[in-house]
Image 1 (cartoon, rainbow, N blue to C red):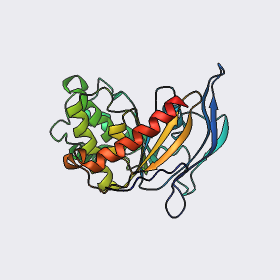
Image 2 (image 1 turned 180 degrees about the vertical axis):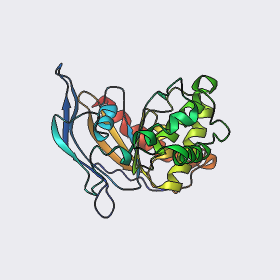
Image 3 (image 1 turned 90 degrees about the horizontal axis):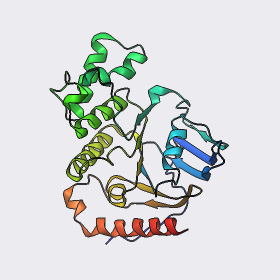
Length: 266
């Protein structure tokens, strides 16, 4: 069995991080401190999960990384000069697919390209290629009302990736789906990540999902939201159903569960 590794500090790998979060706190107008003194480095090509209970600031931190909110204190920097606020470098997948009901699957996917000024045949070809990569070849002309929940989320993921971002931010995208669909989308997400090697930051409440997907799990505690542990999951890729039933997987789930329990009781 792989030895347990518990790292209560950021793990960055070699070179400059893609995103550097330094002393970040967020206080809302009503006085609630959502996040306090978060320090993290996110490496290029890394898959990181933010794990914690409701109210621990996971989504708030994710939105600040995306530029959808500003820290009250501290800074979020891009040392590799990705460009803060450069939408072509970021992809964001929300909890709900947030698709335009009047547009087809292809129309939804190519929206970011249209906003960038990419039009016509190029946009449609890139959109169709991305739909094929997420397993929706043949559904280009389907409307959201004609798609299942899992298929809608695939469209949302395709839309987030169509601009080939360097970092994909995902806010509990599979939480409302049944377990079979969720497992399938976890597998497909890892396949896309291994193919394209974008950085991924994935918000989840699920220990099992975080262990299955991630190279690192950042465990957060609530009130105020803060980092309690940073775990490196020493399990090789690709990961599949065999890994889900392995002793190694159970081992890492126990470690993550223990850290989450400590965070909840802190």
